[in-house]
Image 1 (cartoon, rainbow, N blue to C red):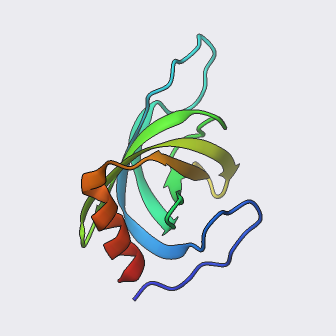
Image 2: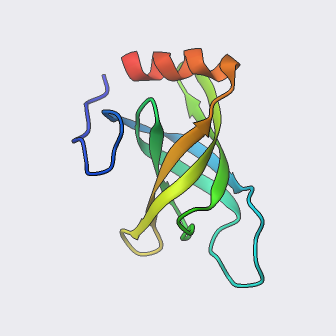
Length: 117
């Protein structure tokens, strides 16, 4: 059973611990400046009705838009979100907070199952 993560500053909804495989791809327009990861494999660390925390291998800039797919026991959860923050954790790992902007109707039921399991 997932445990409830502490509600942090700026969070709009209570988060639940969720350690699952994830894939992300940056979908906003990129610039010529190095900006970190454009796509990669990640793992989710917490999730709520409005956002998700991911552990990623390279930094993502705040404000970047990303497409995310998380493999859960309830099925695949896909959404488009915006990076709210990116903080370095351990060697080569970053914790990224992503606000979900678009969750397709077919994925909303999966999100609710993840939050209630």
